[in-house]
Image (cartoon, rainbow, N blue to C red; front, side, top):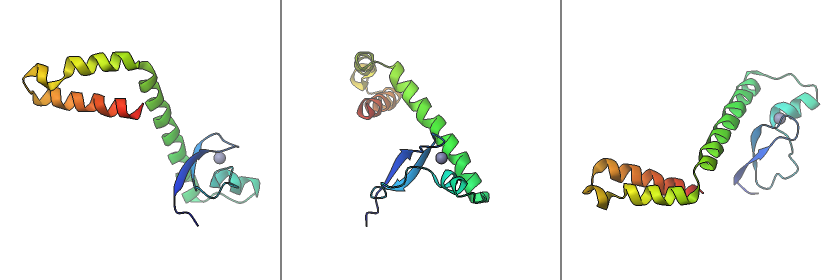
Length: 106
Ligand SMILES: [Zn+2]
Protein backbone atom coordinates (compact mmCIF):
# COMPACT_ATOMS: atom_id res chain seq x y z
CA UNK A 1 0.00 0.00 0.00
CA UNK A 2 1.32 3.39 -1.05
CA UNK A 3 2.21 5.97 1.58
CA UNK A 4 2.36 8.75 -0.96
CA UNK A 5 -0.29 11.41 -0.54
CA UNK A 6 -1.90 13.58 -3.17
CA UNK A 7 -4.18 16.62 -3.13
CA UNK A 8 -7.48 16.19 -4.97
CA UNK A 9 -10.58 18.35 -5.37
CA UNK A 10 -13.70 17.11 -3.60
CA UNK A 11 -16.51 16.16 -6.00
CA UNK A 12 -19.13 17.57 -3.63
CA UNK A 13 -17.78 20.80 -2.08
CA UNK A 14 -15.01 21.63 -4.58
CA UNK A 15 -12.44 22.09 -1.80
CA UNK A 16 -9.02 20.42 -1.83
CA UNK A 17 -8.52 17.31 0.31
CA UNK A 18 -5.72 14.78 0.82
CA UNK A 19 -5.84 11.09 0.05
CA UNK A 20 -3.25 8.41 -0.50
CA UNK A 21 -2.32 8.01 -4.17
CA UNK A 22 -3.77 4.51 -4.40
CA UNK A 23 -7.10 5.49 -2.80
CA UNK A 24 -8.52 6.46 -6.21
CA UNK A 25 -12.01 5.36 -5.10
CA UNK A 26 -12.13 8.38 -2.76
CA UNK A 27 -13.81 11.20 -4.67
CA UNK A 28 -14.85 13.41 -1.77
CA UNK A 29 -13.34 14.82 1.40
CA UNK A 30 -14.02 13.28 4.80
CA UNK A 31 -16.55 15.92 5.94
CA UNK A 32 -18.57 15.44 2.70
CA UNK A 33 -18.28 11.65 2.99
CA UNK A 34 -19.68 11.86 6.52
CA UNK A 35 -22.47 14.17 5.31
CA UNK A 36 -23.53 11.65 2.63
CA UNK A 37 -23.83 9.08 5.43
CA UNK A 38 -25.73 11.56 7.65
CA UNK A 39 -22.98 11.31 10.24
CA UNK A 40 -22.42 14.26 12.56
CA UNK A 41 -19.34 16.39 11.93
CA UNK A 42 -17.08 16.61 14.98
CA UNK A 43 -14.62 19.37 15.90
CA UNK A 44 -11.84 17.72 13.86
CA UNK A 45 -14.04 17.66 10.76
CA UNK A 46 -14.87 21.33 11.23
CA UNK A 47 -11.18 22.17 11.72
CA UNK A 48 -10.41 20.20 8.55
CA UNK A 49 -13.04 22.16 6.61
CA UNK A 50 -11.50 25.46 7.77
CA UNK A 51 -8.08 24.17 6.63
CA UNK A 52 -9.52 23.15 3.26
CA UNK A 53 -10.95 26.67 2.74
CA UNK A 54 -7.60 28.24 3.70
CA UNK A 55 -5.72 25.86 1.37
CA UNK A 56 -8.03 26.69 -1.54
CA UNK A 57 -7.48 30.43 -0.97
CA UNK A 58 -3.69 29.89 -0.84
CA UNK A 59 -3.76 27.88 -4.09
CA UNK A 60 -5.86 30.54 -5.84
CA UNK A 61 -3.56 33.29 -4.58
CA UNK A 62 -0.47 31.41 -5.82
CA UNK A 63 -2.02 30.74 -9.24
CA UNK A 64 -3.02 34.41 -9.54
CA UNK A 65 0.53 35.64 -8.80
CA UNK A 66 2.06 33.20 -11.29
CA UNK A 67 -0.50 34.01 -13.98
CA UNK A 68 0.28 37.72 -13.67
CA UNK A 69 4.01 37.29 -14.29
CA UNK A 70 4.74 36.23 -17.88
CA UNK A 71 7.89 34.13 -18.43
CA UNK A 72 9.52 36.80 -20.60
CA UNK A 73 9.06 39.46 -17.90
CA UNK A 74 10.45 37.02 -15.33
CA UNK A 75 13.57 36.50 -17.46
CA UNK A 76 14.02 40.27 -17.87
CA UNK A 77 13.67 40.79 -14.10
CA UNK A 78 16.29 38.08 -13.51
CA UNK A 79 18.72 39.85 -15.86
CA UNK A 80 18.09 43.22 -14.18
CA UNK A 81 18.40 41.85 -10.64
CA UNK A 82 21.42 39.62 -11.25
CA UNK A 83 23.88 40.07 -8.35
CA UNK A 84 26.76 40.55 -10.82
CA UNK A 85 25.10 43.78 -11.93
CA UNK A 86 24.81 45.00 -8.34
CA UNK A 87 28.35 44.37 -7.07
CA UNK A 88 27.23 41.12 -5.45
CA UNK A 89 24.70 42.95 -3.26
CA UNK A 90 23.05 40.74 -0.62
CA UNK A 91 19.62 42.20 -1.47
CA UNK A 92 20.11 41.54 -5.20
CA UNK A 93 21.16 37.96 -4.40
CA UNK A 94 18.00 37.42 -2.31
CA UNK A 95 15.65 38.90 -4.91
CA UNK A 96 17.40 36.98 -7.69
CA UNK A 97 16.97 33.74 -5.74
CA UNK A 98 13.26 34.45 -5.27
CA UNK A 99 12.91 34.97 -9.01
CA UNK A 100 14.76 31.67 -9.65
CA UNK A 101 12.31 29.93 -7.26
CA UNK A 102 9.35 31.48 -9.13
CA UNK A 103 10.80 30.36 -12.47
CA UNK A 104 11.30 26.80 -11.18
CA UNK A 105 7.66 26.63 -10.01
CA UNK A 106 6.34 27.50 -13.46
ZN1 LIG B 1 -15.97 17.98 0.29
